[in-house]
Length: 179
Length: 215
Image (cartoon, rainbow over the protein chains, first blue to last red):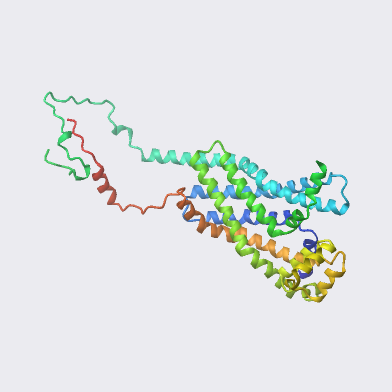
C-alpha cells in the first residue's frame, strides 16, 4: 500500500473511528491464527485439537457478520430518534454502533456460536465415540475363552475360612505362600 | 423516556470511549470474558465438570488477552504509531506541534470542551500542560479548535494494528503459558503423572492382589 492511501486512511479514521473496525479486524485475525495455534499444540489429543480449532474458527466466522450487522442495526435504531441536531445525530449513531458491538460481544455472538458449533460438536463426539467403540472391540477378550457354563464349586463339609489367618495388609502377602 | 435515551446516546463520555480503539476493545474483551463463559455454563447438554472447565478456561483466556493488551499493546503501539507517522508524513505540520501521542490526546480532550470550561481547566492545570505556542493559541483563541484528524487517525491505526497483533498472535501464546498452570492451580486440570515403565504395572498388580481363599 502506498503512503498517500495510508494518509487517507488515517484522516478517515481520525474523523470517524467506529468500534466495528477494530473488532472486525481482530475477529478476522483470530479466525485465522487461533485455530492454527490450537492445531500446533503438541500436548492435546488430535481429536480434541480438531474440535477446539473448528469451534474457535467458527466462532470468529460468526462474529464478523454479527458485529457488522448488530452495529448497523443499532445505528438505524438511533437514527429514528427525533429532535436531535444533525451533529448530535451523528454522535448518537456513532455511540449506538459501539453499544451494538458490546451487545454483540456479550449476548449475540456467544448464543449464535453455540448454535452453530452444536451440530459440529455432535458430529465430532459421534466420531470419537465410534473410534472408542472400535478400541473396545479390538481390546476385548475373545468370546470363546469365556466359559459358557458356570461350574459351581461346592465347599467341603470341613471348610474353615482362612480369612483370619491371612495378613491384614495385602502388600506383605506373597504369592505362593505355604498355605 | 426518549429524551433519556437521546441524552445517553449523545453523552460525551460515551462518545470519547466509542471513538477510542483502546477503550472500546478493552470493554469488548471484558464483555467477551463475561458473555462466553456464561453461555457455556448455560448449556444444558454438557455435563457439569466439562462446563465448568470450558467456562473457566474461556474466562482465563479472555482475561489474559485483556491483560496482555493493556500492559503491552496499548503503550507500545500508541506511541510507536505516532513516532512512525511523524517520520512518514514529514510534510504534515500537525505532527510537529506535539511531542508524543499523550500530548496530542491531552490536547484533543481539551479541544472538545466548551471554551469557558476549557480555559478554566487550563488555568487549574497550568504548567502541567506542556503545549507548543501554536497549540496554546488554538485552545485559548478558537471556539472550536482544530482536531488534527490525521494525528488521531495515525494513533488509531497503530492501535488497530496493535489490537490485531496483540489479541490474535501474542495473547494465544501467552495464554498457553498462563491458562494451563492456572487451571491446575484451581483444580480443574490434573497434573500430568509420569508414564509408568513396563515393569511397574506388574509389581503394582502383585501388591494390589488380594488373596481370597474360597475353596
